[in-house]
Amino acid sequence: MKLFKSIQLAFIISTSTFSAMSSELIVSIDHIKNDQGSVLVQLFQGEENYKTNKSQEYAMLTAKTGKGELRFKNLKPGEYVVRMFHDENNNNLMDANAFGMPTEGYGFSNEAVGNMGPPQYKDMVVTIKSGDQVVNTKTKMIYL
Image 1: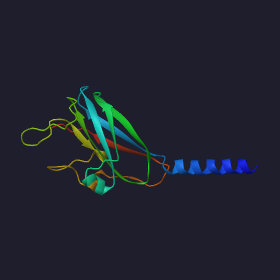
Image 2: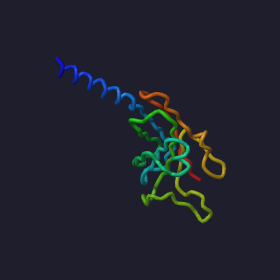
Image 3: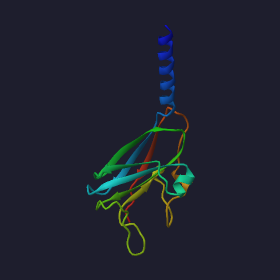
Image 4: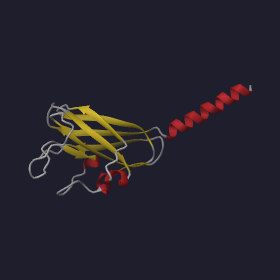
């Protein structure tokens, strides 16, 4: 009987630990221009990590004209930002012209758009409030 109670307690603890980190962020990507290359995506937790370029996770999606979707799982409550670019030539770099303007598509969470640079953090932030939540954000590829 004592063994059964210990196993039951261990199961309750492991289940509560899992549910405390079972939030998921679904990222919908729209306006992918073509099937060439990949879409490279970074997930940042918190403003400081975004500003210092320390991504929590990254993902790669094979480019398909139109739309795409990916999921980040087991996230803790907090603020998150997603940024991405369409790496059409698979060189793992966001290519730019001589003036520094991107020559490949890019996008941010909440379909945020910047003015002569990236959007403001507050416009991109997606908040996960509890440990058992599914949150959606939309992104839109921008091609200059």
